[in-house]
Image 1 (cartoon, rainbow, N blue to C red):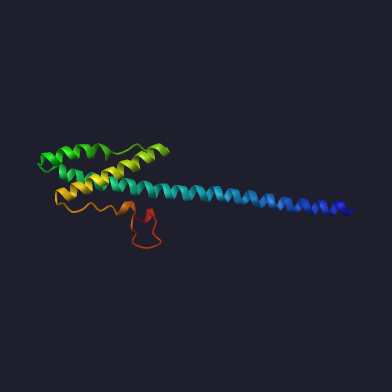
Image 2 (cartoon, rainbow, N blue to C red):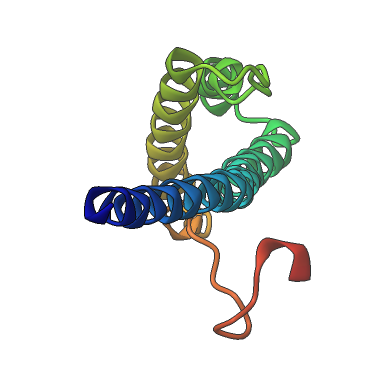
Length: 137
């Protein structure tokens, strides 16, 4: 009879452990999904914000009548075109590489044309308050 009492206690401990594990795993999945989504929104916003700034600078320079500058801008412009929105690591790496290449070329062009430097803050946004999120902008 003592064995039955101890078995039920051991079963109760296992049931509590399994129940807690399942609850924790479910809560972790939900929270992980929310955090991943927020990080994705913020990263995408930063990348496309940088591309927008760069395309704006290119548009301004295209209006100038400097032939040497125009030929250099054609090369830069093809790398700054809006990339696809696929969620693929290879595409993301290509986008990052293109942004770095365009940034470097635009900084050189800015130095050669005595234009103000291209300020992109290394693709990091500076929020107005410490607890701000991407939705607050």
